[in-house]
Amino acid sequence: MRRVARYLLRDVRRCLLASVPILGLLSGSASADLIEVDLSSAGDGLVTRDTATALDWLDLTLTTNLSVNAVLGGAGGWLPAGWRYATDPEVLSLWFNGGIVEIGLAGSPANLPGITLLIGLLGETLSGGGTYGLVASDCPDCRVNYLFPNLGSSFVGVASMGDVFYGADHSDAATGHWLVRDAIPEPATAVLLMAATRSDDVPAGQGMRSTRGFESLPARQLPGAKGP
Ligand SMILES: [Ca+2]
Image (cartoon, rainbow, N blue to C red; front, side, top):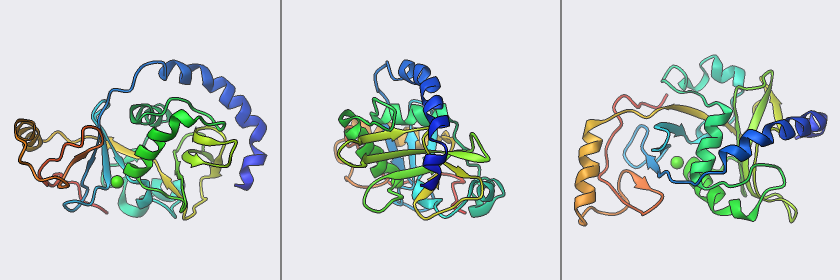
């Protein structure tokens, strides 16, 4: 985190500049379901599907210990497998759809349910709380977008962009990457969804798990969704 101080002034400026569109984006209401789906084996839950944006998000715990340059160069096999870096607006949309209501280092207790939900879905990269993820914007000082339930008494419910930056060759065990891909249309899934909504006898805890409403659907495999 030694880069925090180095970029503090620039980042404050960026936050101020970014605050207007962020506030505008967050003025609506969260309505999307985030659904945990499987990546390479039934029940692995390594992908979070945002049904509002039709984007699949890779668990950040799968991409720690990799630098942005390494990922862009194919490390981990994620980009060759069809994943790409999310844009900052896409990350914001995910956060918003997960229930985040305020962006910034100061945080907000109102963010806590959303942060808990999102970290539960996407994985906790920093043991003890928090998920850090790089995006490829602002490189070679690449932006870290992160969620942290409690950074201390003055920083509760932190969902922040633009106050931490890592070099494009930086990697560590506590920082993953915000990787995304278009959700794969799957006719079989639609059938399963219809069947599940018409029946109460689907066993709980199998396959897709909605984070709202706790619907459970039969286990399935994403076509072509092979882990690297
Ligand atoms: Ca997950």
